[in-house]
Image (spheres, helix red, strand yellow):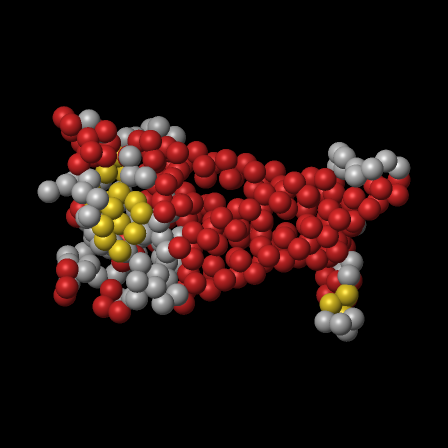
Length: 289
């Protein structure tokens, strides 16, 4: 019997939305940097500079609208999805808060093991995701305040709805500067997220990075299948009862040295049975969702 099995933990809709959001943020970062500091023009002369800026601003606004819709859909699916409502796996909870020091120690190389988590780690759930949501909300409000346009067929305008934003930050130029600073916040926090996923992938050999494309990740057998990350005993049909992000055994650890044993880390890759795959996304039903 293998020590770990492949588990389908990410539905293709979640994967699509993830990369759509990442792509939108990348385009918004580049176009936002250009709006703040124009570094090229299509053609020469002041007229071409204005035309280039107009196209860049239009692109910035369109991708901002796509981002808003994508995040709204992802947020709705996290709570009301029929196949994988994963709000307990990608947000702050009491257990995640208690486990935060342990996770921070793991990513700072102060310890070698950690509790098992299903999707995102406590650092993401408790710190980064809430900060991203706050930054995202500020980006929407400040972006529309700087847009200076009309809405609802001219019935109202951003000056009417969000005129308080420039006044709150002193003036429009200050608001524009803080809106620009969001680029560097998302770049910095994004680099931290990539680092955490690389560390988890290389140290645990669980295909975390690959799962962002395929949805499949290697999971210790005792936690499969894991609806909501539960480690509770299997119920009817062999499915485990639902639960919030951590295993039922609070003392359970994933130790890289203990896990690799005498066979070495590469041994897991060779011992996985390709036919031994378990769907961890599907109708909630008996899993307590």
